Image 1 (cartoon, rainbow, N blue to C red):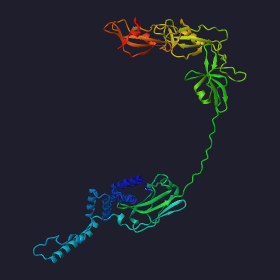
Image 2 (image 1 turned 120 degrees about the vertical axis):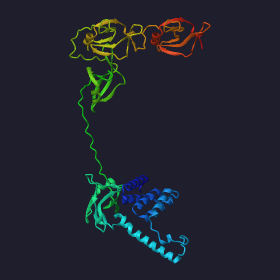
Image 3 (image 1 turned 180 degrees about the vertical axis):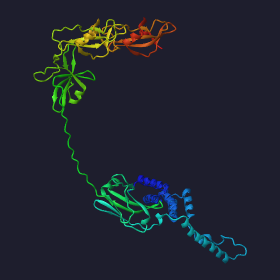
Image 4 (image 1 turned 135 degrees about the vertical axis):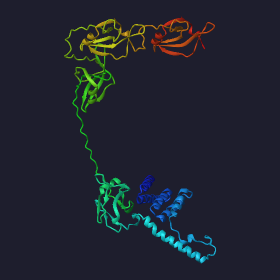
Amino acid sequence: MVDEEEIEEIYKKGIYAYRKGELNNASDLLMQVVEANEEDHRAWNALGVVLTKAGKYEDADVCFENALVHDQSNEVYERNRKKNRSHIKKSIKDYFSPGSIPLPAGVSMPYLIGGIAAVFILIITLAVVIPPLLYPAPLSATAGDIPISIEQLPDIVEITNTGGPGTELVTEYTVTGNNQTISSPDGTPLTLGTDIGSTLGIPIDELYPVSEENSVTLRLTASFEDGTDRQVALKTLALPVITPEPVIETPPTPTVYEPSFKKGDVLIRTENGVYVLISDLLSDNQYQTEQLSRRNDGLFFVQPGTRQNVSVKEIEESATKSTEFSIPTDGQFRQDTPYQAMRSLSLPVAGVNPFYVPGDVLSRSAGSTDDVIVIMGYDPVADEYVSDTIYQYYSGEWGYRPDDQPEWNPRTAIEGSYPARKARIALSQIGIGADSSPPGTQPLYGEGDIIAVDRGADANLLLVLAWHPDVNQYETDVISQSYDGGWHRNGTNKSVIRSQLEREYPYKVRNVDASLVHIR
């Protein structure tokens, strides 16, 4: 069953063939459309136009009649029918009817009829003789039968030119399957020879690409010397059903990785600096890993709930070895047990004392406030300092760290790069983040304080409504003085981080009873 999309595609091909002057091909394609859908008035009209062009006026008239049956009011179809009928020869009775011709004076009816008959015979004679001389009919319409044999053999379809009266007028035979060109392996369209007895063999396997549900309709079209063509053979073949052989997939050979790390190795993840312990080697190309935390004295602890299995490839592409632990007697690393990194052969001998102590604030040169770090601890076994960048608060005090992720570096690297000690601070007094405030210090403002950006009389004023130590924030509102000397506020309470408020509003104007300030 041909669906609507295929019918529409055949219709378009028929119109295209007509525009190229391939009248026989166009009529064949449009005939397929009306055979598939007898109510397609477009196709009937188009087929009539093609047949008119080919000189088949009687057949064209039938097509226009069918088109008007399904679309009676179409003026285009009516004009095409009238134009086609102008080519159809009329009988004498159409030219002569009682009262249609006025009789000249003095001429009797028998003579008039005889004269008209003579003229009519002359006209018919000229119409029959002259058109074929001036406009000969296309060879595709006048050539005799051209018998073509299509035979399906077990492995091949054999097409044979058995000859006929019109064979000598054919210049080429083309073959299509389901209206698709059939080509040889090198891409050349297949053609049948024009000599009588010529044979074309098409392997069955080459028809499957153009088949539909193992069925293919072979169509043979003959092209004539005058450029016209017509279908000379049509046969539908049922192709053998191919049962695909089952594909037996060979399982891929697993890739075996030779691990670069061993049990007890401590790694550092390159993307975030997290310590990872290789707690075991597994048989399926995986490491068993656990995350570690490291205290300021250098001791490591296994973080609970972090055990996971990770592929050897992933770990070795994303981490580097930092140090290693001695493997416990029972081979198990426990969460509540501190572990000390083993001394590296490259480390100095024991007995070397560190130059800095926890709390020392260091810079690269005396007086410099750029690139300042704070020493947070020291590991004597690994001979490493733990440190972090530190910044001054808005008040000038040291200070705060950008985050809670310190770094471990060799003692010699720290002492060589940061030779200047700027200050010393208790580790408990170091805040985390720029919005923090110096730990242990009291807030500058309390409830009822009116604060300002500067000392100007028209400065913007805020009223401190409360201090929330649990979140390190003030609760504030905009306040202004009324005409009677009192105060009123907007009622749009807003929470502000302590450090931000004290930095932006450094001046205290006065203190009032916040409960007596009316909301405007």
